[in-house]
Image (cartoon, rainbow, N blue to C red; front, side, top):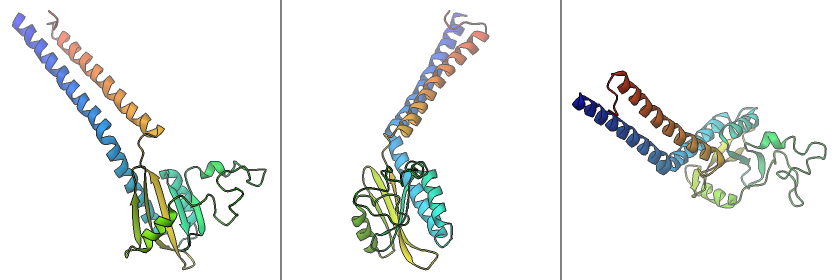
Length: 218
């Protein structure tokens, strides 16, 4: 009986150690590699969105499609003329700021009004910093596309043809910082899910051993 009980204790301890090992590996994966996975996903989303807009560029509802994609994918999107004049702009906060300045002509909307910028069609917000470098990179690329990347952001762009036949420039930007609240929340959820799973696995193993009629502590 003692040998059997000892065998059960060893089996239980091995099970707990195995579970703890799996938990440690999952924690390391989400801590060490989560940033790389997030960056790849964000870049892939931006490129896929560029493809969708390009395929939709000659449609009458192009700008409505841009608003939808920028909101769904948390992207900053511009369509400009060759010299950078804004034809349309959108980001995930646009629907909120549409109503922000109601009643005062939009003058309290920090995105579309200041003492310098003049009103123009589609000008929801000013061009982002570094747009000149983006244009230079795009013009110097024989394929008519470009990709720029830093530690904090990813930008892709290309030429697109609009409904009237005009060739315009598409700019799409996204952040690559996994320290934002949404990503931090997901990482925290993964950690606690793994931790609770470890506890449940240990308790379940103990219960199953007790069900054999040979308590593992004896």
